[in-house]
Length: 309
Ligand SMILES: [Zn+2]
Image 1: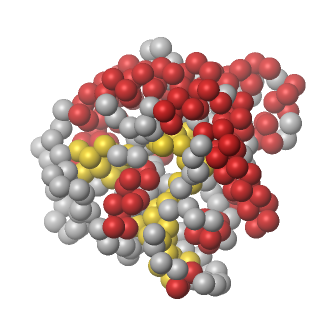
Image 2 (image 1 turned 135 degrees about the vertical axis):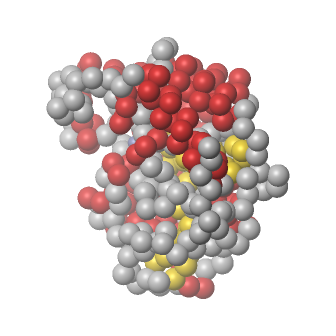
């Protein structure tokens, strides 16, 4: 049985495709709050938990993606690029996209404008020097951003964000009521592997929960989520973390999920940057409800006159 709502106009995708999958990984490594407050340097086992991602899990994920012929986006703090340069170069060499996710996974909500600019510029320098690319995509670390972040992203040449949750279609961000060139590709917690598979002790995470979800259940949930997106012709992106999903048993979940997706007709597998480019080029613009929670009462500055590249 397939649910096809009558009152939603589905997005358009490059013919003959009828839906899109922009597979995305957050290659956080050991960055995050424990690194930002310095406590991680007194906790080697916690560091190793994160370092497992770029060190051990990433090659496994790249192998699976290569075998499936699917390219993906890796939102990567620049500190991880500096620390594991060869592993991160392999992402680019394999045809995948590397995109911005802070320098050390800073929470943009807590940063001043100047601090945000410094993190953006510093990270771009690392990407340029180590990988030979610059990021065009942004996913805000730690879940939320500062009211002025979208304006800063436009001003620094970013073409898209994948940070919001309020829609299941891409849309253009508005700043002070002005539609900008910045495409939002919303991701959902439903496709965050932390919600299913993350587990650590001391500190306990998730707090109050001490079980890992069944792998069969996880695969079934993600398969059904994809089926729903495909049926409605939407764009599915993911919040997967190599250190969580790139383990020997769990990689089979990804392998089987990709096999299921590839068995369906009309799925466009693309990087987030390609989805954003298509969204602008095809002129699909705003989703009326999509700007909710994204557009903030900000000074528009010169944004109104800015042309989309
Ligand atoms: Zn992250």
